[in-house]
Length: 131
Image 1 (cartoon, rainbow, N blue to C red):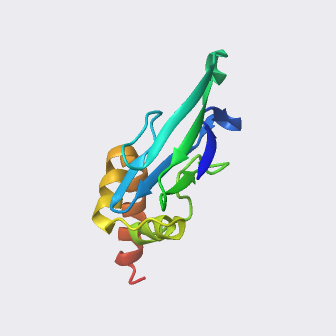
Image 2: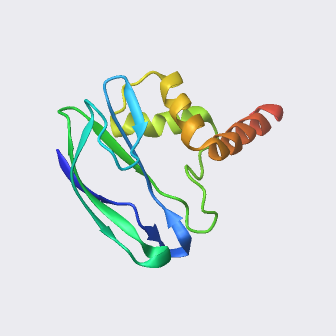
Image 3: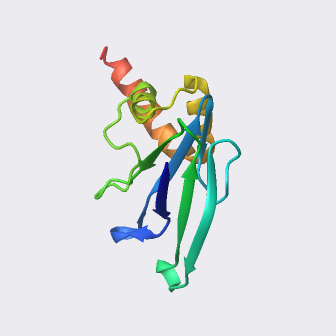
């Protein structure tokens, strides 16, 4: 599978986040090839101040998956509407991720700790009212 991915800002200074994986591997794409998962075969940097961006040409391993996490329009939150860590893990499963839940959570805790904190707080608040 091949794809083109652009890491530029979207309106309201929102930025996408690309997650990739294969087998038990799950990772945030940071602009470099990830052995056994995705190869960067080309990139084009466009300098434009705040709007500078890079467009990547990617080739994925057979049976690899990807998921683009967008920030919500108003709140600029990732995984907006997810009420639990399980909800987030389900999004990864829907994208084809076969990694263990703890590997998904570990990746998310590393690359978006603020988002995971918000989701855990929501989960705890719901649990506190018997939900």
